[in-house]
Image (cartoon, rainbow, N blue to C red; front, side):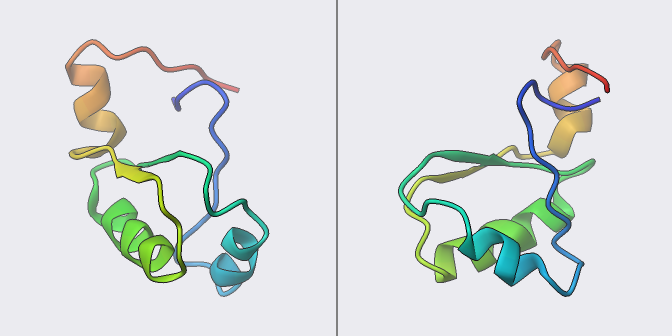
Length: 74
């Protein structure tokens, strides 16, 4: 599952920098993955690229769902 309205951008893909460059840098972003490791990398890259409102979902989507957080599929 994922958060409603989430957009999947693979931090390990070669085009990750190009894809985030197309995003508004002053919009808020919740950055997460399954466990929190890849999203920590993505967060650092986004901050270095000048994004000002990026937030890490510590523990990833697994921790979110274990805490009762709502996800969607599809």
